[in-house]
Amino acid sequence: MWWAYFVLVSLTTISSWFQIHSVLDGILAVFNGYGLVGLWGYLRRTAIGWRRFWVLYLVLFSVAAVYSVGLVAWAAVVSRTAMLYYMIVATTLLCIPQWLALWRYGFRSAPIWQAARVAP
Image 1 (cartoon, rainbow, N blue to C red):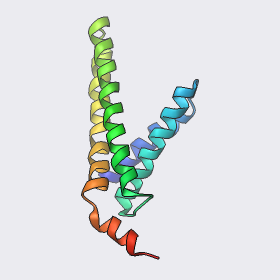
Image 2 (cartoon, rainbow, N blue to C red):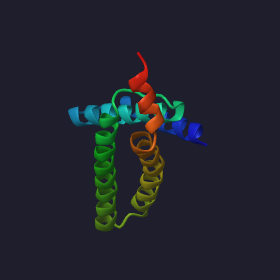
Image 3 (spheres, rainbow, N blue to C red):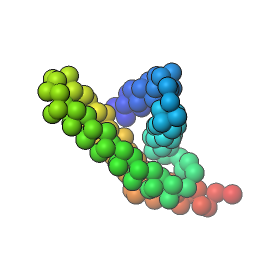
C-alpha cells in the first residue's frame, strides 16, 4: 500500500515541476521533492542525510500542510464553492500518510539512523 502511495505522490510531485510559474512555485516543488526523498528513505529503510534534517523537515511539512488546508478552507467558506470542499478532503488525505511516514522516519526509525552512524 505504501508503494502505491509513493507512486501517487511521485506523480503529483513530478507533475508540479512542469507547472512552475514563479519563484515560489519552484521553492515548493523543491520542498515537495525533498518530501519524496524522505518517503523513499522510509520505504527503503535507508538513512538519507541526517536525522535532524528530517525532524526539521517534518515540522516545516506540518506547517505547510496546515497552511495549505487552512487556505483552501478559507477560500471554500468565502466562495461557497463545493469543489473547494472536495479539495480540502483530498489535500488532507494526501498529506496524512506522508506526514505519518516522515514522522516514523524521523522519530521511530532509530535502527536506520544508528546503522548509518556505524557504517564507514
